[in-house]
Image 1 (cartoon, helix red, strand yellow):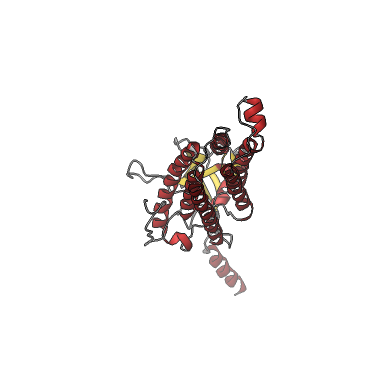
Image 2 (cartoon, helix red, strand yellow):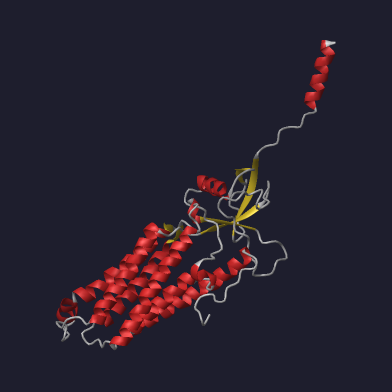
Length: 331
C-alpha cells in the first residue's frame, strides 16, 4: 500500500505545471531598424521602463538612462506621420504596454544630457552678469573703452528702475529654480544649454547696452510708471503661477495634473501669459527696441509650447477647455 501511495504521489507530481521563467527577451531596434541586440535584451516580466533603461545601460555603458528614449513600434498600416508610443518612466512594460517575450521596442539616443536645474541657473544668472556692467561701469565702458561723450552724467530714474526690474526678474527665476520648480524631466540635451544661454545672455547684453547708453532718451514719467507697474504686477502673477504649479506635484509625482486654480481657470499657460506681459510692461517703460525683439522671439516659442500643452491637456483630461491658450484677450 505504501508503495502504491508513493506511486500515486509521483504521478501527481509529474502532472504539476512546469514553473514559468520570469524573464522575457525584447528586440531592441534603432529608429533606422538596426537590431541592437541580436540575442535580445533580457528583462524581468515585471520590469518597468526604468528597469529596461538600466539593463540597456548595463550592456551599452555610453547610454546612461537619461540619454535613452524608448517607444513602441508604429503599428503596420498606420498613417505616415504616426509616432510610436513613448515608454514612460515607472510604467510596467507588460501591464501598461503589453510587451512580452519577443516584443520589439525602438531606441533613440537623446545625446549628452545636462540637469534641468543647471541649465536654468546658467541661463538666468548670465543675464544679470551681462546687464549690470553697462549700468555700474558706464564711465569705463562707454567713456573709456568706447570713447563716447556724456558717459559721466548720472543715470536717469528710468535707467535705474530698468536695472532694478531686470535684476529682480532673473533673481526671482534663480530662486524659483532652487526652491519652487519641480521638473517633469531630470535632464535636457546639452545643446539646449548653449542655445538658451546664447539667447538670454545675448539679448540681456544688447538690451542693457542701449538702455544705459549715454544718448538714451527716457520716456515720459506717466508711461514709465504705467509700464513698470504692469511689469511688477505680472512678475507677481508669474510667481503665483509657478508656486501653484509646484503645489500640484507636492506629493513628488511627475505625472501631468490639470491646473485649475488662479489664472489657469481662463488661460492654459497662465505662467507664459504673465511672462510675456511682464516684458511688455518693461518695454513700455524703457522703450527698448531690443527688448521688443527679445519678447517677440520668446512669445513665438511660448506660443508653440502653449499649443502643444493645450493639446496634451485636452487629450489627458476629457472636457478640458479654457477661453485662452496663452495671451488674453488675443489668443
